[in-house]
Image (cartoon, rainbow, N blue to C red):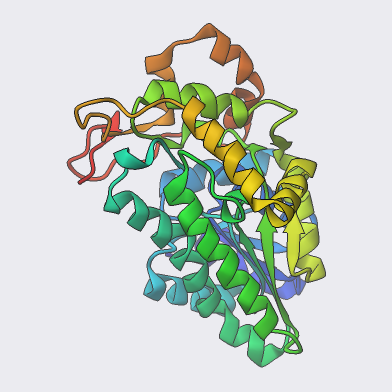
Length: 343
């Protein structure tokens, strides 16, 4: 990695602009959070494990009149994050803001998931925030100044059927960030737990589906696209950055998220009944142990080939094109492009 040759670090340092690090900046929400920070005068360094997606993110940012500095890093790799943090601070100056957005969405019946699904979710969405925090926090503590943000989910406050690995990891992220926030009181450093609901980022095409993949896509994709259910992603990114920079401990986004958290707190039994009814209405697992292959959203959409779902996901489809979600991730060695086989 050579941040200097790619980003003009000397000019960035001389500007004395605050430096922000965004993990998961290559597409969707992370890209929009990066744009929001850049608009507010930050030097933004975006991290992703996918170099091609990062190049696409830089192109998108240039189209918006903003600059994105990049480094290839996997949030699961603690040593790599420490290396990147050291180089960013050497070339750009101290990191004042670090926001973890990286995530993976896995949709389907619990019986179709195996241990590897849970490991992937926990490694990225729980160990990821921990690794990023432990890489940047010592410097922030020593300077008595810093802002940390972790994007969790309503799924980390209320466990949702057919998203169990996701909720498992997000519950951990909520617990970690809330506890960290309390320990940092009086240090000059703050940690913000960001709790969004569904957002129109276009990320449904990057989600992974198990079970009857087409049927799972048919309910999940519209939910992540319809205006009454999902939140405008640009507005969400702005509210997130507001909360992190203000040092707020908890940011609940959208009226539905706030209502859901309140109902769960006041009447957990009622919430359980309602979600139980939802679970019964969702697609059943295929018989005979089938449905364990993991299908990318792009391919689940092609399998479904439904004009009704296409109309219901119009806004989400537009968002996927605008926010760099249409680029396919690089398949791992030995894995077919359409599906990922686990276990």
